[in-house]
Structures are given as C-alpha cells and as structure tokens.
Amino acid sequence: MAINCKQLVEENIPLLIEIRRFCHRHPELSWQETQTMAYIEEELTKFGIAWQHIDKGGILARIDGQAPGKTLLLRADIDALPITESESNLSCPRVVRSETPGVMHACGHDGHIAMQLVVAKLLQETKDQWNGTAAILFEQGEEDSPAMRYIVPYLEEKSGLSIDSCYATHLRWDVPVGKVAICDNAPMAGGFRFRVRIAGKGGHGSRPDLAYSPIDCFTSFHTHLQELRLRAIAPQECLTVSVGSVHSGELQNVVPDSLEFAGTCRFFSYDHAGRRFFDEFFRLLSNDCDTYHCTYDILDMPKPLYEVQNNPVCVDLAKKAVTETLGAGSLTQCEPWMASETFAILTRLYPGLMTFTGIANPEKGSGANHHTPQFDLDEDALAVGATTGLAYALEFFKTQPDLPFERTDEPLNELAARNV
Image 1 (cartoon, rainbow, N blue to C red):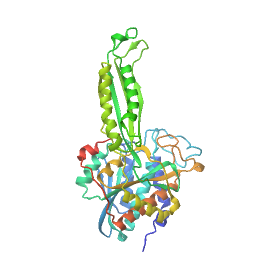
Image 2: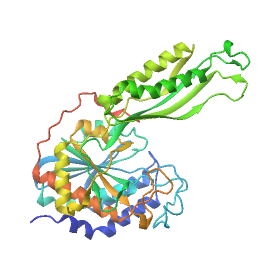
Image 3: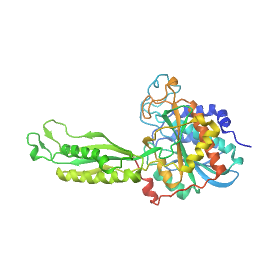
Image 4: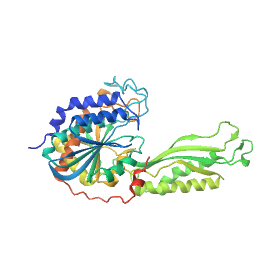
C-alpha cells in the first residue's frame, strides 16, 4: 500500500508546532546547544530511533528499512543567533517568543529541527515499507561553520555508514508559505571571509611624505578589489564582494601605523569564479602594499567554502515527489540565495539536494529577512517542508537511483575546514 505522506504529516502537525515552539523559546548559540541536543535525543529515543553523539558536531541517528538499499543522509541545523528578538514580526505579535535574552532563532533552525524530527518519526513508523537506510543528522554550530571538521571524519570513518546521497531543506523568507522551490543549479552560494591588518609607518599629518599611510594603501586595494570582478570574472558568473569593517587611527592630524579591515565574498561557482578571485585577492594585496611601502598580515581567512550543488537526478526526483504529494501548484521558482551553507561540504562528498520551503505570509507578518530581529515563520510551512522531506526520502528509497557524480579528491581535513 502506498504511503500517504501528506496525511501522515498532517496527523503530526501538533507535534511539529510543539517542537518548533519549544526550540524557539529555548534558543542556544553555536557550540552551546546543550539543551537543544538533549531535547532532540529525548525525542529520538521516544520514537524508538537509535542515535549517536558526534563530539563537537551534533547528533546522528539511523533508521534501517525492511531490506538493504541505498543510504540517504538528511541534515538539519540546530543553532540560534546572537540577536535580540523584536516583540512583533513585520506586522503581528509573535505566537512564540525567545525566553533567552539576546538570542533568537532568526534563521529558521527551530523549524528545521521540528521538520527533521517528524520526518524521522514517520520514517521509523513506515520502515517496513521501504528499503535502505536513513541517516538523520542534526548539525550544531552551523552559523559558526566549523562543526563539519568533526562531522565529516565521523561520517566517513566512524559512523559505519556508506552514504549514497544527502538532502536538506531551508526555510526561506521570500518564498510564499505553501510553496517549495527547487533550483536546477546551485541553490546557495559559496564564499570566503577575510580579516587583514595593513601595517605602514605613522607620522604627523603635516608631513605625509614622511609616513607610509595604511589608509592610502587600503583605499587603493579596495578600488582594485571592486575592479577585479570585471577583470577576472566572466560576465555570466555571479560574484559579490563587500568590506563591512574598517578601523584605523584616532586623531585627525596623525597618520596611523596600521589599519584593519574585514569582509566577505560570495559566488555560485568556486571553479569558475571563486577560486580565481581568491587567488587574485592575495596578488592585489601584495602589489598595493609594495606600492605604498606597507606590509600585511592575514588575521582570519579560511579557504573558501564551496557553493551548494544540486544533483540533476535528485532535482528531478524531488520535483516528482513534491508534485505527486502536494500538487503541481506547490512548486515555485526563486532566485538562488547568495547566503552560504555548510551543507555545501556534504554535496562535494555525496550527490545531494537542498530545497527551499516558503515561510512568507503578509497576513501573519512573516517575510522579514533571515538574521534580523523581525524574522518569523508561518508555522503552516512546517507541514509543507516535512511532507517534502518525507516524500523525497521515500521516492529515493523506492527508486534507488543511479546518481552521476564526481566526488572530490580533496583531503577530508582540508575539505571540512573550508569556511565563510
């Protein structure tokens, strides 16, 4: 008998809302998710699902179907952000508020936890009707990114799993509630961050000729950095770069000794845009420092994080699953998201898919951008996202697809250390 994913999820809507509201009331920052993980572990145990703790990485649960088959990894992130939540969203009082001052789930991870736990529960309850293995990953510290340093080695060397594919969904502020968006290409960007100190020679403002100004050096570098997008990146590629912090000097009549600046770069193709821009960044910085008789120190600049990659076979499977379960009208188009995601690392190891679950509803005041005090979600989205995840997993286990994929040969420790 075919499994009615939509009906099963609808029967668990009260549980979806209960989990989401508990997590929203008790948000925890990256690496501090003690209560959140204890709650997740308790729920998994209640569902009869075996789980393992990944030190500094999160929780990995496992559900085996009725017979051997492919292994699908489903991932949800669980950390919150250091943001003070507003009393209302865009236009309405909130249905639930954070009880932790200065911390809120401003990116929807509370919803991700709820959807993932309910999907896990329903896969456990129907495991005698599908073949394969579902690996359920709850990732801590995603906003801070380094958890993959511990997750990737665990998955590859300690979990006992041979993962064939990976899946995740992300709630999205600008997609209407009730809709699911599936990008044919990269749904989320790669990128890198930088924090650099330029050292020059200070002096009095009346004799700049006796000083080597780090401000002049930075000004030149910043101009060249913006020009680099035109000179080094093909017109069809998308890449942004921004400097969000500059600090130097204290007095108007003194040339300072040093300057510190920081920013980020984002792109949708590391191979065609990000790699060259990253390499040219150092060449430009070195040249401008030489010109202005300055030196530089890289204070913080990990290797670039890759873009999330959607496998074309997984895309087709997901569109089929969503259409058959929620109806053709539930699929919608959206632009790729210029934000970055650690899920990108998993899609370099396993063919995968990230979907977007819409949460925007003007009548309920949801639709503020992520990482803002007004961010909120329409809880009706939880059933849509959970149904999509369950339907996709069951379609994957039913189809047991052959997935064209070229796995990275980058050493695991280097891959997992990539960050933005």
